[in-house]
Length: 277
Image (cartoon, rainbow, N blue to C red; front, side, top):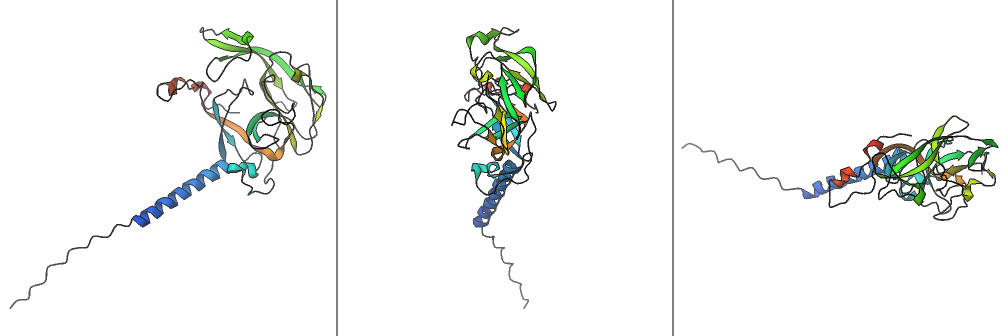
C-alpha cells in the first residue's frame, strides 16, 4: 500500500497589527513636530505685517520669513517664549538699518517689526522731522511720492492723501524720502507732515539696547514713545530680538473671500513676493 502524503496545510493569515501602525504614525507626527519646532526656533520663522508703520518698504498684508540666527538665540526664539535658553547665546549685535522683529516692551509678549536706528552708546534725536545720530543730521533726500492702492488692507491716514493713480484706481499718495545712515545703509521713509514726534529730546541708547523706528515716521509708535502696552515701545533690550527680516513669501491686499476661490489669486500682490531685505 502506497503512503499518501497529507495535503499541505493552508498558510495562516498573519494577524493585523494596528497597534504597530499607530505607534509608527505617532512617531512620524512627533518627528514632524520636532522638525517644525527646530526650523521655527533656530532657522526661519513666519511673520505677518499687521499695520502700515513700515511703509513704504512693508505693506499691511505682507507675509515674510525672519531669519533667526543673525542675532543669536534666547527664550524669545522658542515657541511661546519657553524659558529653556538662559540669557542669550551666540549673540550678535544688529547693524544700523536692519529691519528686526522683536518682543515689544513692556510686556514682551507681542512681536513688533521696526528698523534699527540707534546702537548702544548712540544719541538719537529728531529735530524738525530730520533724524540726528550723535548730533549729525542723517541725509534725507526728497524723491518721488509713494503710491499704494486703496484696499481692505490699505486706507489713507488722512483724506488729503487720497488720489487717483495713472490707471484711475484710488491710491494713497504720500511724500517719500531717502535716508542714508552713517554706515551707508539707505532706505525710504514717509514724512506726512508736521507732528509732535518730529521734535524729540535726545535719547541715549543704553548698553544692551536698541533704538527702533518705523519707516512711516508719522504713523509709527516706536522708541520715540514710552513703553506702554499697545502703544510706544521705548528703547528695546537686545535680549528681546527674535530675528531679522529676510524675504517676503506672500502678500495680499485683503480682498480675498473664502467662498470665492478666484479672489485668492486676484488679491495677491504678486510683484512683492520674493522681495528681500
